[in-house]
Amino acid sequence: MDRLIIESILTAAENIYLSETQAGPNSSLILGFREDHTEQVVHAFSVLKKMTDGKVVELVICKTLVSGIFDLEIKTDALDEPVRILNKAITTAVLEQIELQLQQNKKIVLGANVAGQESWITLTDAQVKECAVKDR
Image (cartoon, one colour):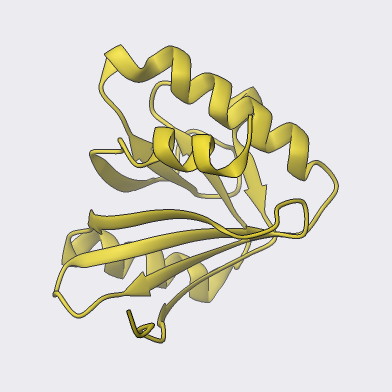
């Protein structure tokens, strides 16, 4: 499975939230999917975890020009380009929770509501920032 397939599967995320109860001492950033996407999401997370095992994995939550809409980028040397999950709504309250968590601990776990914790990805760094808008 290549990066573009993983990207297309993860783009189906319908919501994003922070969970402090599912991954032990680290908070978890959870991508929420409908149950009919379970098999694809589990497979994508498993493949991504296997590819990134032992490597640095960063998550960048990029602010866009539209308030409340963000692009997520999963960056790692294991892939030629970041996995991009574009145009996802994150509420102000959730974004504040994420930013507060990241001030306390940059390590966070990326998971999915339909995938077991064994396929979740431990991120070595995560940040929310203004990203450069590329000319099209």
